[in-house]
Length: 83
Figure 1 (spheres, rainbow, N blue to C red):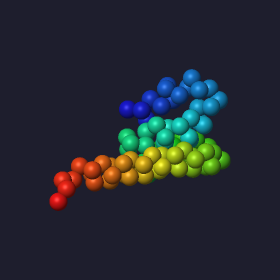
Figure 2 (figure 1 turned 180 degrees about the vertical axis):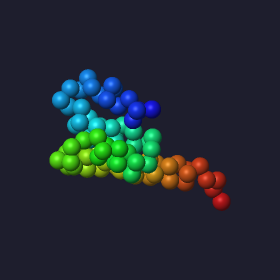
Figure 3 (figure 1 turned 90 degrees about the horizontal axis):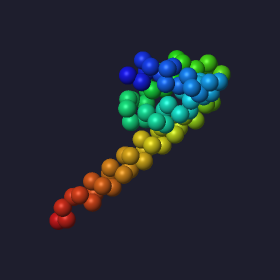
Figure 4 (figure 1 turned 135 degrees about the vertical axis):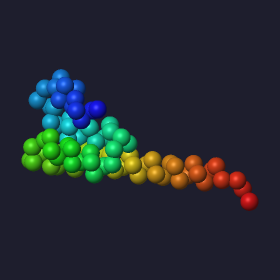
């Protein structure tokens, strides 16, 4: 749904719309779709010269994925019955 209406949602950012797509979208929607799909969508929307901004946004998204994986692993350890 977001991808179909991204422009309408981000147009209020004015000249920062592409920046929001490059850096903010991956960090907000990191858990909504595979990161490869998010990255492909973002790269299709912003100029090629914004590759460093896309990388920063994707690095933030990858960090969030890693944090979630670590937290889930630790929660699973706590939830296991003691033998």
